[in-house]
Image (cartoon, rainbow, N blue to C red):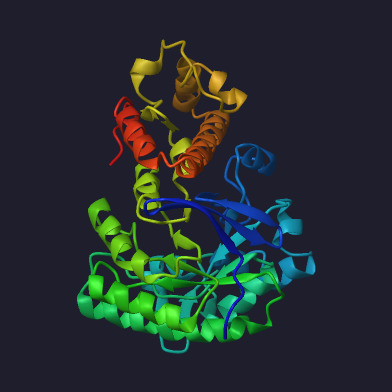
Length: 377
């Protein structure tokens, strides 16, 4: 079945691309970073601040939302947007990554994966069909197929088994998605671990099935960055040029920049808010660890030239004090600063691609990052 295309490629600069992805709840400018609102909330941030930072789309988690408060309950309350108060596009992951993390509590079979709820220990079955059903009940603008994600390093036999199972689940997911309303989208997920030929086989199989967009999953799960980038280079040339490409669960600003240079359009990661809660700020000069004593008497803001929110007017000394005191405000301010930095990076990448200057921008950005307290990996 041929699927409609909701993605418009606006500009290219080498492999780097910029585009516009239309959804029922708005347009997403790509390359796009999706902050993670796991349980329908952004940790430490109001949706207003997430939007003001330049965010077009956010991510919700199928696994957590189906367990609490429940997909049927959210559907009865009008869907995720109405339930949460976020009035823009939402993508939900399938739950496969969370199920992987429950290695001691799950059993994977051909039909479905069965696991124990981390909330009350109840037995739950998640099949490709149920994963799609849950995401349709949630009202996700973009749903993901159910896949099996393998933590690296792993034996080739285990990687290939999971990849083949994910392809069979991809076909079932697409069939289950046929009753979705017009405009909503389903993405397939390429697996294959760190084995190039398995990655290629997965990408070929997904393209034959046909999806609105294509994700690369099973990376940033223990492998070095060099391996992650090598796997992107194996998969991207096999994907349709006119469909969006999504690198799941990634990552650092350097990861994003290097993945865009290889043709990736969409990203998600908990890192901006998680690092903010642990006292680390992302800036154009690299990462700054506000726990370090060197900041205790520093009156400067994180970045004097920043166009970020007013929170950046706080001195490093004050942010250091908040972090060391365990004040919730410190985590909130740093989360906002980090989300704003990630979105500014995406904005600047889009501008550079549009003007044909991405290579120069990439080089300048990498040079600046080296000036921070902690060099990117």
